[in-house]
Length: 130
Image (cartoon, rainbow, N blue to C red; front, side, top):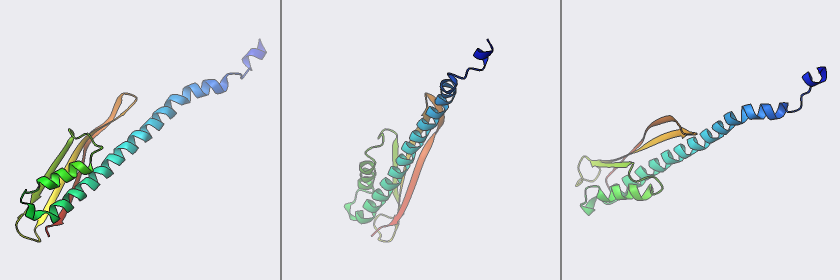
C-alpha cells in the first residue's frame, strides 16, 4: 500500500492536462492579436493610398470619390461592410490645400468563444493637394 502512495506514474500527464488549456488559449490569443495588428497596418496603408490618390487627382472633379475607392481597394482583405471611409478637403480647387482621408474598422477580439475586447481601429492621413 505504501508503494502505491509514492508512485509517480501519470504525473506528467496530469500536469499537461492542467497546463494545456492555458497554453492553447495563450497561443490562440497571440494569433488573434497578430490578425488585429495586420488589420491595423492594412488600414493605415489604405488611408495613405487614398490620400495620395486624392492629392494627385484633384482635377478629376469627384471630390474624393476616387480616393475613397482607392482606400477600399487597398483594404480588400478587410470586411468591407465594417469599413467606413471619409475624405474631406478644405478646398478641392486650390493646390496646396489639405486633404484628409480617415478610415475606421470595427473589430472583435475573442479567444475560445469569449469576447476579450472590441472596438474600432482608426487611421487618418493628411496630404496637400498638388
